[in-house]
Length: 214
Image 1 (cartoon, helix red, strand yellow):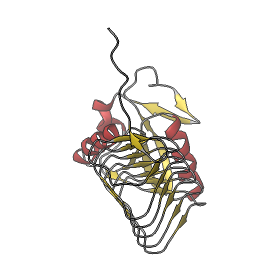
Image 2: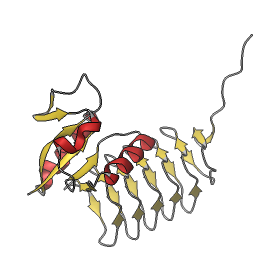
Image 3: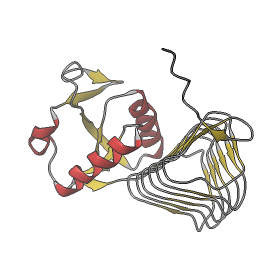
């Protein structure tokens, strides 16, 4: 089996480890993390090493890696650094995910148990399709998006880079969401959204800051 390591020793990493172990395609050689409190510990049996600037001493360049960090912008930034160092982004798909035969999934992505990705869907690199999430036909996502547990992109939805689609939320068919959009948990998106929008509720509306009290 090919060697692989994970960057980020979090709870998210535990889920990815389970996916890798079940698939049986890789041999996990450890994890890297920048948190001094985690270095020298283990995560469900795998050693955590670091800090990140000594990475090439710990894992040879050309080793495959998954960035096991949930926050989209950080995951994308770390992946850029790792590929510049010569590491290759791997993809992990749970054996109990359902993918149509023509689905395209970008490198560095993870697809978790119970996820459904239907015909014609195109996921950008570094995607997270979390537990039970649904991506219907002909949807497209930009780089480093996170579809949280039980979220749903209905057919022909297009979302930009670094979007967070919250747990249990729904984006109705044929909509376009810009970059860095955040959809709150349980929301129902019924209109296109611009870059950097944050929406909550059903139907989803922009999240307003509370009034300032003197």
